[in-house]
Every structure is written in C-alpha cells, then in structure tokens.
Amino acid sequence: MAPHPDDVERRIGARSFARLLGDWRPPGGRRLTAALADRVRLLVLDGRLPLQMRVPAERELAAALNVSRTTVAAAYEALREAGILHSRRGSGSWTQLPAGSDDGVSSPFSPHGDRTLFDLAHAALPAPAELRGAAALAVEDLDAHLGGHGYDLLGLPALRAAIARRFTARGLPTPPDQILVTSGGQAAIALVLAALVTPGDRVLVEHPTYPNALDAVRARGARCVPVPLDLTTAGADAWDLELVTAAVRDAAPRLAYLVPDHQNPTGALLDSAGRERLVALARRTGTPLLIDETLAELTLTGIPQAPVAGYGAAESPLVVTVGSAAKVLWGGLRVGWVRTAAPLIRRMGALRAATDLGGPVLEQLLAARLVDDLDPVVRARRAELAAARDHLLGRLASAFPGWRPSRPSGGLSLWVDLGAPVSSRLVGAARRQDVLLAAGPRFGLAGAFERYLRVPYTLRRDRVEPALERLVTAWHTLDEVAPDAEPVAVA
Ligand SMILES: Cc1ncc(COP(=O)(O)O)c(C=O)c1O
Image (cartoon, rainbow, N blue to C red):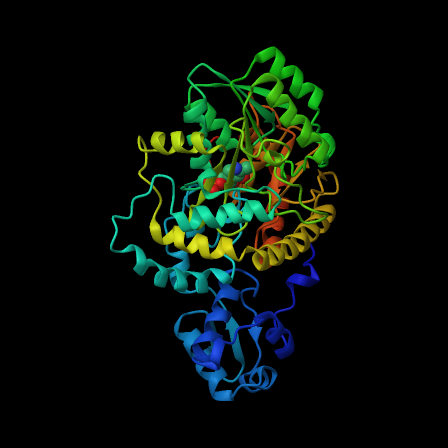
C-alpha cells in the first residue's frame, strides 16, 4: 500500500507546534519550563504529536512562543531525560515513547504493554490533555476526605452531584440521589442486572450488540432475546420498533438492554420519535429499559439526542440509564454510573455490597473535576474523532475496495461488511500480523455476523497506515489460517 501523505511528514514547524500546544502557560507565568515540558509530553502520550516527529529548533520555538530560548532548551532537556525526545547531535530532536512504555506484559488482555501490537479490539482513546491538571487538583481535594473512612456505596457525593449536573445540562433534570457511581459502565450493567433480573429470565438485546453486556446477561443466568438491527443504515432506521414491540409481547423479557446512542458496534443513533416510542412501550408493558449511554457524548455530526429517560420517565424506575467516563474521558479512570429513580438507586447501593464496597476516592475526585468541565474535552474529542473517522474511511476505501463500512454519526468505530463470511479467519490472520481485532460474531449470538468486522478509528494517526498494511497482508493470507479461537479483551 502506498504511504499516505499524512503519515510521511515527519517534522512540524514552530507555528504549527505552538498552535498544537494551545493554552499551555500556567496562570501567573510561573514554572514555564515544567508547564511546556508537561504539555509536550501529553501531546506525545495521547498521540496528537506522532512518534518520530522532528520538533522545531529551540530558537524557532522560543520565538513562536515568545519565551526565552533557555526556557525551551530546559524543557527539551527535561523531555530528553523523561525519554519523550531523543536527539542526534547537530541534527535536531524527535519524539518517542519513554522506554518503560513497552516493558509491560503483552497479551490479548493487556495489549497496551506492547507497542508492536496494533490494538483494534478496544474502541477507546488515550486520556485527554486535561486529565493531568485535574489529577493535581484532585490530590488537593483529597485532603478533605482523609479524615473519614473513605467508603461510600452510592459514590462520592461530589461526583454524584457532578454527574447529576451533566444530565441536567443535557436536558434531563437530575438530583444527585438519582445517581449511583460504579467502577465503570460494565459494573453498572452488572449491578442493574443483579437488581432487576433473576436467573432464567429473558433479556431483550439488540443484535448485534456490545459483547460484554451479552456476557453479563449470561453470567446472570438469563437468556438473551435478540432483536435484529438493520445493518444497511447507521441512522435511526436501524431499529425496527415494531419488531422490538413484538419481541416484548412474545418473549415477555424481564428487561430490555438498548444502546440508542451510537450503538456499539453499529454506531446507529435513535431519533427522538424512537425514544418516545421506547418509553411508551416500557410504560405499556411494565418492561424496564436498561439504556446504555456509554457513547452518548460522542456525536460527531449533528446534534446529540436527549437522554431516553427525558421522554417522560425522568423519575421512573422503568428507565435505568448507565453511563461511563471511559469513552469520553478515559478507560483507565474506571468510573461509570447508574441513573434511575432514587428508591431503586438506594436498593442497588445495598446490593452492591455483595461484590464491592464503593469506588476509589481519588479517582472519583478526579472524575468529578473532569465531568464538571466536560465541554472542552467533548469538543476536542468530537473534532479529533470526526477527522479520524473520515481518514480511516478514506484509507479503507483504497486498501479494501470490496468492503462496505458504515459511516456512523458518532461513536468510535466503523461496522464493516466484508462481503464474505470470513471475519473470524481475518481476525486470526491479523493476530499473526500483530493486529488485534474483535470478529463480528463477538457482537452476536450463535455465530452471527461472520460477514462483519468492527474497526475502531481510535488508533493514533501514525499507527493507522502500518496497521492497515498488516491487515492487507492478513486479508491475502486468509486461506492459511484457522479462525481465531483465542479470546481477546474487547471494549
Ligand atoms: C456500549 C458500552 N457499554 C459499556 C462499556 C463499558 O464501559 P467501561 O469501560 O466504563 O466499563 C463499553 C465499553 O466498551 C461500551 O462500549
């Protein structure tokens, strides 16, 4: 595959660099060197500054930033010591990842430990630049908690309040007693299933859907009732609500698990008419809806939809919403939440004690800081992801002209029709090329979706081309491999 021009440019000019640095100066202009070094480090670690990129000469950057050359020289020196820059005498400095970042154990369950692996099994982004500053503030906030015992089954009040404010800002008035904080969205799903479903019950699911939710339903001893999505569209038509209604009537599920906001894996977004119909169905039949909003903040084109509970079920236990900080902020935070009627929240808090006595205080303080100032992060994420989606679509069109990817209006991945039922074999062949992928059948029941592959657009830009080259090799060696049988962690 010919290299794409985006992936060939290996130097960045002083003015572009200054622009990328953004508003890096600390208030009061103190500790300029440390602030500059910190910002560059973050840009490299979160992938906005590609690896092996030549940074501007000290004098040029000093002029562009209007700081002394000594400040830039000291920042570069600190970055060299931290292993973020390496220099060749007289010829400049290049970005790199610190040596320790590829020392970790490498396995399909811990792929980040190995830089040579291309991880397309996790649709997830690196932490935003804002995380470090918020972490410093969270450490200060911690003082007020150190005198207490640190346990809270419902979650730290400051974070419950911040999440409640975010719902309110999204058009769904929410008091903090309607929020329970969990250790991630997955734990939120498991807790809701523990509260509402008993072994042997049926749970309606979209088909395809998020694999770990299917596993959580199975782990609860419940049976999935799949309702097919229309895979020819990533719009609201993906849901046939007549079919959903018929499945509720015929199978009498105990609960319906739905992902109406940039559904994982299809990216489809349900419109307001559909949301209204879902709530009406829940009311008519008494079937609670478990609405997974994990990807709701990541609308790339158009306007995000209001939360489903906002369609007349703001205080009803019939709509239980789960959310997560993982996709909009960072998976490493391990913060998620449940929003529903306050009495059900209290019941779930009591149930939670069987498996877990609350989340870590520091992470919750950090999440509270970030959730309270989410708009700048969301804006940056949306712009970044829209560009990444279009870039990947363009590259896939030339590398795999026979594939038919979706063009979702949000979320983190494309759902690709491969044109033949070879997804598991492709994933096996890709594994041999050090590319981790989740095959279509992971998102379905009984081996469905062998023609489909989920491809996230979350790889750093300078890793897309090499990953696609390996995928092309894998595509041409399909006949040599058995379908991938080894499990891979998916998010
Ligand atoms: C739809 C959906 N729900 C829940 C989760 C789990 O989120 P968390 O990482 O917060 O446990 C994910 C993660 O991939 C997801 O895509």
